[in-house]
Length: 261
Image (tube, rainbow, N blue to C red; front, top):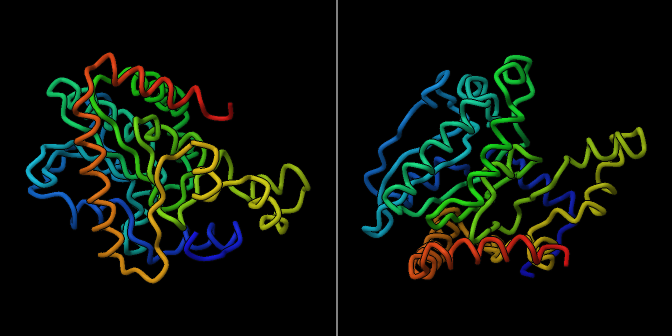
């Protein structure tokens, strides 16, 4: 472990407004990226950016949660909290990638799915459930990278994968520390204590086999972190592309069966 931080300090680092999100990694890692829009059912969700491009001449499908930079952009994107059409757009692009056996790379960074009444009316829970079901059987390599705050089912909807990677100061949890503290102790001020018990840091999740790799951040620039991530992605893509469809699905099944064993 490259530096010592409390769990809640890592939560605060993951939420930092200046922390690069999905679009940053697309811009600095993916060549000739073409964004694709819409779920072909209702509309487009700007909280999820998806499309196709190349990483070192390897064609890939990239799906990224994006909160935006300016306040206007963040409001338009619901601060990175996707709606049902965002998850359906993501699944549409994944199924397209499967057709051409193009690797899928997902960048996760959201406090959770958008909880507005419109999203609920349009089937938020079903959209997330469909992604979990379909991604488990997707016949193409899937790599998910938690780059910021990975919250609840809204994050997990892009997290069913063959290889899970986390940045050191990212977090990944079923609930926010504040939400957990409010439920358990009726006091959101106990969020730091809840964060420690949730075991939501990258190193906690590495020890539980929830994620396979952690990328250190201490003393590194965003570009250096991006470069390290790109190297790992290329290695994982090469390894996963060498598997048959049956081997790939068996590998994915075993990955989730061993969690918590």
